[in-house]
Image (tube, rainbow, N blue to C red; front, side):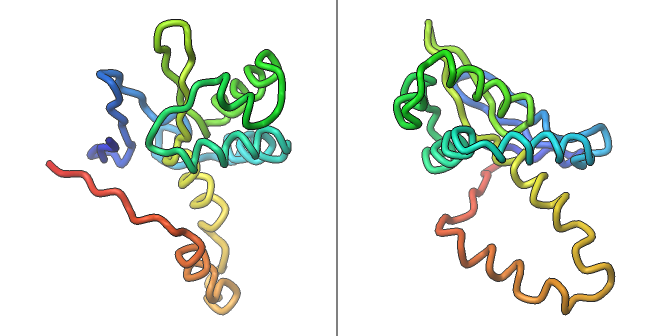
Length: 148
């Protein structure tokens, strides 16, 4: 469950664990260095595949071993890739016994997209004409709603 806080940061509640999104600076916006880190993390094919796998599974967590099998890489290699994505603010993790479970940090991803499009038009909306409609059309999911 995602809960929007008064300062616009998001908190997740999952199995009694609260995870704050690490993708935002203290102003509540993604900064340039964090955006570059996230883009570099996604620029590697295995990490991009892992991230897309976790987005597809959202909101359910996926075990690290299952992600490694999906990406056809050894577990220790996958662990390194998952750590890079986590540091970049694109994943969250939790422990379930001996297993590490991962979720896509959709708030972090939204912050990255917002950073990339924040000044996209520079006061000239014709430059970005259709961009947001295309993003909306490409998303086959329904937005999450939070009750209470």
